[in-house]
Image 1 (cartoon, rainbow, N blue to C red):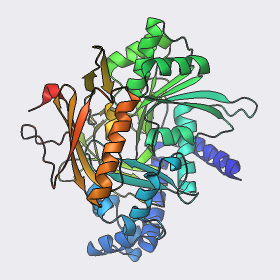
Image 2 (image 1 turned 45 degrees about the vertical axis):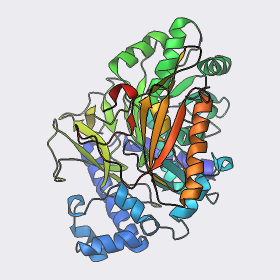
Image 3 (image 1 turned 90 degrees about the vertical axis):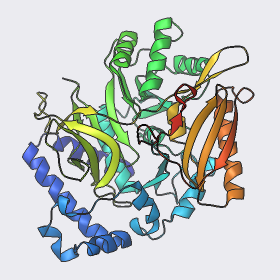
Length: 455
């Protein structure tokens, strides 16, 4: 039954690609009205929040998206238990669940996918998807990103390189790819490079996906002759795919990488088409508003912040949720014939790598996404400052029991360093603080402050 439901959704997603832009807009509005009725019936937070702004069930058909008040991660997390539409889902229980290593790759209560991230803001975010919600996401990824042809007789070998030791968006996507379509090899971006090379050589993936920087790393090893693989499709996400990285990946493997735009708030928002490499937003299952600092929409061609409305997550609905990314929309549709709008530019946060020196003089790094995805139950916010070449200061805001949370933070950081063979080379200390202030020069928060940029 699960396979049947997924195949039905895949077919539905494919049909939407043949609609006109106007038909997509009408479909989007229909789904938005349905979601609004759902949250007004099931979410205590949205009931109160919208009522404060004069929005009730009888007015759903008369209001537009711009009439709804926005939310952000801070509001979402402060009201988490009331925002979710299932009273059995509680923030405290979720944090305990994802804090247990043996639960990695498992569903909460055998039904819910849980994703956590600190993001570039350093603030913990929890995102929960029900089975039906997650299947819509899987249908979009299979149809519009991996573009895998359904073959029940032969599985596609998929290698994923990224952070894999937690409930992160990327590995959650990879682990939930349909087992009747894919054979998965997860590769930890924090593993020693030689180990990664040996595994990917043995596996010989048909599809290579993961962090853009991770795929770029493998491209460099292919050019050096340390690996010899022949992927037929390459999908990059998580961190920016620069023009230099794209050219190197193409030179190494002979094919163009596909850029995939995903976030914990929605694990399938946009992808490049194969014709012109235009970035298409999947606005049949999302509402994307590009706005200025006053939440007023900007014109196509102008850069603005993103307000996301996820139209398929009925478990933890996000309506006019503020992402940290800034986007510029194109004025025109793509020549490929897709009805979906085109992104000219995505200006997301880009964190720095942490570079260290081993006792033998070799350089080693910790990938910034590993820090972005740093999670410990009770940790509210984090900042990592490299005070010396091989010394770190971890500033932490804690909402739980300090005596329990501090040892867990230290244990998690030791595990990250051990993964790179840096446990005896790099020291760190944890400082509990009440507030972590932005950079006084830029006014922006930096999750990672490398030694070379220390102020």
